[in-house]
Image (cartoon, rainbow, N blue to C red; front, top):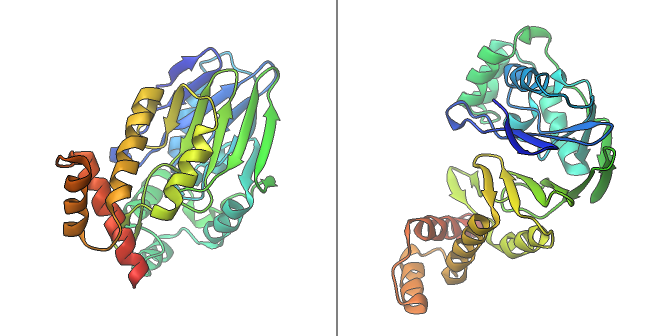
Length: 282
């Protein structure tokens, strides 16, 4: 079921138990724009069925926030101009080269090209997989792109991110709403979850230059400005004390710096930044 944020912005909330990220709908006087396509054909179809209940203008654009499978595999269901940044376009090419029959999918899992969960969702939620081929994007931009839906402007920007190298955010100025995709999250490398510490401050600066009151995230759905500020503060507080691959030293530094123990979120972030040092040391 769609959630209404304003007269012009709706979103389909994330479902973590099915690896479904938040999907967005923005519309102006003439056109509608979709943010992310869903993790499979079925996810996209359900989103479109909900949109049909609204009196929204025709869908003209689909913006992909980044090239992870749960955001792109529903792409073929949208009769729209697909917009990506240049790095996302390169990463999508790998998914376009795949075959989606059971034997091929199992091979990709065995080669660590695809997760087991991804394979299972493809098998259950993409019909006619033997002939399935992911569509190509139509518009490729480098850094920024403005789209006017008819008295409703959307600003697209590729930003630095602790999650992926190809993150696009979408800001709607007159609504003070920003869609972040997964850019504010960490990532997993060699089975270690980590935040790319060197990109944390640049990422926050890229996001905070926009005057936003509501933040749509891929796997939390929606946060207000106060919630996001708490998130940024806990991340930066944790990052300041991590200067090596030693969790013990980082925790000691935290207690010396802040005269208290870290809360659960800060402890989680400290471990993630320590993991980033471990990964860089290898």
